[in-house]
Amino acid sequence: MTHKHPVLELDAVGFRYPARDDGDVLTGVSLRFHAGTLVCMVGPNGAGKSTLLRIAAGILAPLAGRATLDGTPVHDLPRRELARALAYVPQEFSPAFPFRVAELVLMGRYPHRGFGRFESADDLALAQRAMEDADVWPLRERRFDTLSGGERRRVLLAQAFCQATPLLLLDEPTAALDPAHAIAVLTTLRKDSAARGTTTVVVTHDLNLAARFADRVVVLASGRAVADGPAREVLPGAAARAAFGVGMHAGALPSGLPFVVPE
Amino acid sequence: MIRLSRTRMVVGLAVCVVLCAVAILVAPFVGKPWIDPWRALGQDGVEARILALRLPRAVAAAIAGAGLATAGTTLQALVRNPLADPYTLGIAGGASLGAVLTIQVGLAVVAPLAAFIGAAAAAALVYRFARVGRSLPPATLLLAGVTVSLMCSAFIMVIQAFADWTESYKMARWFMGGLDATTFDKVLPSACAMPLGLGLMFAVARDLNALSANEDTAASVGVSVLRATSLAYGGAAIAIAAAVALAGPVGFVGLLVPHVLRALLGPDHRLLLPASAFAGGAFVVACDVLARTLVYPRALPVGVITALMGGPFFLILLVRSRRGTGVWG
Figure 1 (cartoon, each protein chain N blue to C red):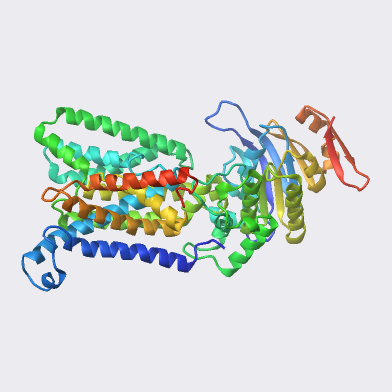
Figure 2 (tube, rainbow over the protein chains, first blue to last red):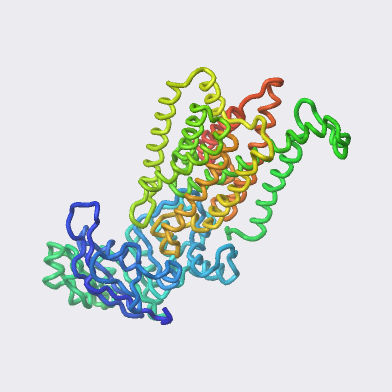
């Protein structure tokens, strides 16, 4: 990966969990994520959004098709090399031991430092900025297991920010966040995409956030990408209606702020 | 900002190293008879010969303690459960089965070797059943470990049912764990295997930090999950096998030492693992001194002391955590 802005591509990705008898989770999903864009992935529960994200992160290997980073299948890349290009934030996270917030955030520097190296001044500065961006700097000395759900989500985001990768894959980063923090997080992601050319893929159920911040919205339903485009076109469309089982009305406030309401 | 700095690492580790060194050097002088260092050193009398008997015993205790404590710390991180120890994962059970088998067939001399092989076989069996694709999930590791452990116990009971009095007594003594009649010859094989086991665990110390958080997060920050878990598990298996072959199934070290150190030093395995090795060594050396002095002229098995010393201490920690002060301080 010599490119500063690697291109993540999913090509006819198919997947099923071998131990389960629930058929294909994903069928022929092809998507391309360009540098500097923020893409929101939406869809009903069980549509395969998280599975797709884990395949893109190289954690699961697709059973059909390929997930590639600049043409190399992500699953074949050495983990550490991949970790310098791509950060993934899972939905759930519960450390078995009482790590402090700063310790967890600094783990984001692991792929950039050799084993046995202590964190440098640069690492600490990056970690501080990451924590400020995710608004967890005041929590830095707190034990992770004493934080609220929303605070934990923000710590995970700080860890991903601290990893400073050109690609960010986030699984429901705003799920437990209050509106102010949800908007703040997406504003940061948005700014990052514009300033550093970061490619950001966000799985979310918050269609209003998607409408307001995403360059592109992908609708996933029953393991297929059924719609892909700007939020104002995709969300009120027929494919989204079929996917969610309810139509969406998309509009804009006089200030220009877009909104989406189920009909 | 809270982090593992060089100063914290050096200070924390230095304290544990000094503790362990002092324990090994002082232990041979303690006991009945007490030995006056100024008279014994540099001469060739009875006292020097007593020292020569006690020193290998202290070294053996340190090696066994280092292996059990470090393996306990590693296994707790691997299964993300603070209750894991060398016994819950079946490795020590395999060692006991190997030892009991050789005692039954009248080959008690090779019991340590059989214990080592039994531990390795049990570890391999657990690994084989616990592994799912490219990962070693905590739940399957724990279940496979407990299952193998119970199966080993069942086989041991079968063998014991057929054993005569002398053999039964030898088996019972073996289970209690002990370091009687230890010579440097007997220590040597475990002393050679232990650095390999410890080294494998130390090599993945940083990966264990990320793994004890979450497997996917570990992968995301660049950890090859299967490689790291396999190295950690393999290292723990070698360390436990070497420790149990040397000292028998000494309990509680692998549970107590990791918890106390985590409370004192924090959860970062880059410091926690080497600290466990030295503190675990110091702890077992001290327990062994008590084992051979408390009820002199008789000697207690060292496993009894570790459990009787460790048990109440651990319960105090639990009570503290219930009051909200936290097991981890």
